[in-house]
Amino acid sequence: MFYFISFSFFLCSLLSYFLPSFRRYRTVGYFFALTTFLMALFYHYDGTAIYIFRYFMFLIGGLSVIVMPFLLILLMMLGWSRSRELENDHHLKKIGYWLIVIVLLTIIFITITSIMTRRNFDIYLLINIYTGVAIFFGSSFLAYLGVTIFYHLNLRQAGIKALLVLGAEVDDAGNISHNLKQRLMTARDLYDSSKIIIVSGGLVKSREVTEAQQMKAFLMKLGIPEQEIYREDRATSTYENLLFSQKILTSLQIDASETLIVSNSFHLLRTHYYADYLNLNFKYYGTSTSWYLLPFSLIREYVALLLLTKEINFGFTMFMLIAGLIQLY
Image (cartoon, rainbow, N blue to C red; front, side, top):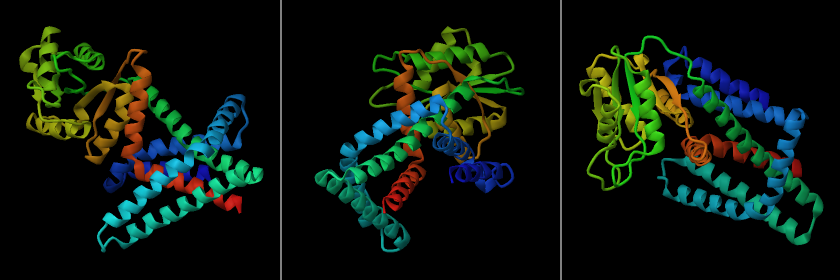
């Protein structure tokens, strides 16, 4: 089953090269193809590393029997509230949300009654159900790590005319974050007289100076000529970084395929997703991240990616829960 799902996602990504309407699904297709392929391996092979991973997920599944009912209640309430917010012309969406509510109510009832009546057989199967959900998200995180490592290989790209440096945190005192310094210093290393640099980042919170202004000043201190640095001062998100910077590239008659995006490696999968959505064929260069910042950065970016693809993640979660219920009965 998971091999088939993996192949379907991969096929969807391949179609994006021939059908422009599929372009927005390219990166997310590769990502979930790798995720479900890892799931297939975890379910069908017993290598030591895979066995250890599956055992770890089983422990998480056991803990979830206690915690999950409360999370399911929150999801059920969210689904119920979303169904009430939809207008009358969204009948299919309403039916979908109500089906989610019914499935979650069923699982909550079975979980609580199994614990209260101490039915060990049901509890064991419930742990298997939650283990399946844990394996999905575990595989998803491993796929994210794998893609991040791939971006960090930084395969050299020819024909680059512009470097696009994506903004990051600048504190209230105007100090540039370590991650942003890494991006700017990498851009300095990649720069030569045949390229221009675009720095993208607008006002965040109540600051009076944009991220792009601070980035340009930093690059000038590194020796980049002022006339070779173009500012994009409006963006407040990764999506807007790409959207607004593309307008500058168009005015300079530079194509997206001639532009190298410079950002931390952990940030490039989500960046690539937005570029596909905007039908922009950028190239990518991943910078390093200090080891003490990496765990938090990876987890935060992974959560952002989950929210970005929440429909697919929610669909997988429901699939695992429903498949477990069918096994239970």
